[in-house]
Amino acid sequence: MPGSGPARSHRRRDQRPSSGGRLIAPPLSISLEPSFLVVYPQDFELPGELTTALDDAGIAHRAGTFPYGSADDQASVAYLVEAERLAGLGNRETVAHALELIERTQGATTIVLADPGDRAHLWLAEDPHVGGWLVRPLDPVAVVATITAARALRK
Image 1 (cartoon, helix red, strand yellow):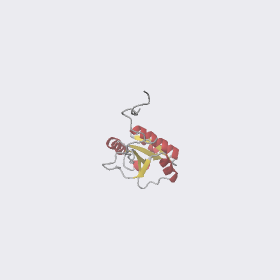
Image 2 (cartoon, helix red, strand yellow):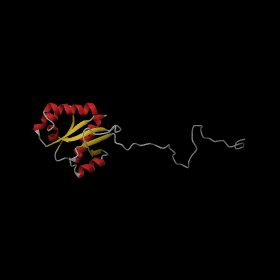
Image 3 (cartoon, rainbow, N blue to C red):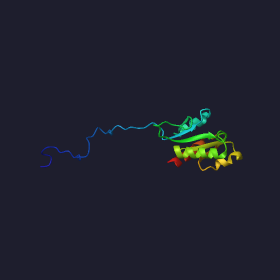
Image 4 (tube, rainbow, N blue to C red):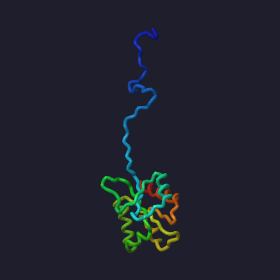
């Protein structure tokens, strides 16, 4: 007779008991270390509005040295460096070799900062190991777009 006998659960065997409408999930481990990081020279002054734009875009950034990182740091790196600083490393071949080593040994890229129309560093803009080019004064939206494109190239 319907309704007589022991009550049966209509729960399937693979379902867990209800918790009053709350979702129960196992603990989750989230890494707070960035997978992509912009590194600029220690003496480079990052304007406040640029810092805010990078933070708002979720782009990790910090002053550092080359090469950046430690054995346990697996972040992909983009170096933001002035054209004049790169050119100061030596002749064109030396600079080109340094940019190639940055990419080959670290899987990193270099984003160059220069003056608008800076034809003296055109050779640097043509280097295949340069991942982006920015001009002064830095526009926060252009910086975020350039870094986002460089990050996509590193994947």
